[in-house]
Amino acid sequence: SASAEKIFSRFSATELTKQHQAFIIKAEGKIEKQSPATKGKKAKASTLDLTLKLWQEGKSIAEIAKERSLSENTVFSHIVDLIKSKKIISTEISRLISPKLKPEIHKINEAFKKLKTTKLTPIFNFFSGKYSYDEIKIALLTKDLVQ
Image 1 (tube, helix red, strand yellow):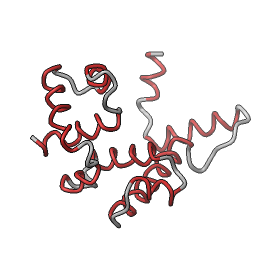
Image 2: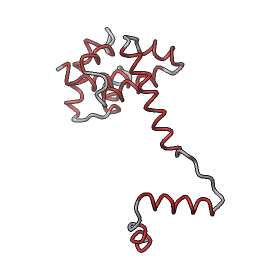
Image 3: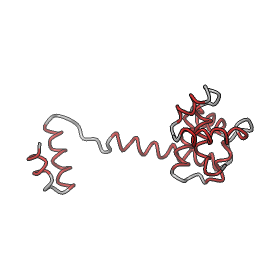
Image 4: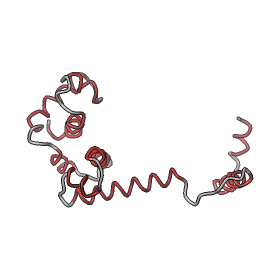
């Protein structure tokens, strides 16, 4: 393995790609124009962009889910990804906080501090399931804003 790695390290990326393709053809495989991994990333990026566009139009998670024929959990995970990538700005995060959750966020964030964790399950268990994982996630996302 080490000697093969040494030999292949001498090839440029283009040459290495040609070698890989030649091997696949000799093994009677097919060369795809775009790898499945790349396709998934592009599809995910575009689905996030679609969710972002609808979010920026002021639509709720439920409205986005209905319009895109996705589950609310999927849309919520898109929103979380968009917040983490800073495509959704901090002032917009407050739209995620339901009136029921708003007075509870401080308690949840205190539990994060007390337990010295950013994991969801310890917080879920700490409150014996009183808050959903999504509510805990929202609290975690907003902890720097609400303090």
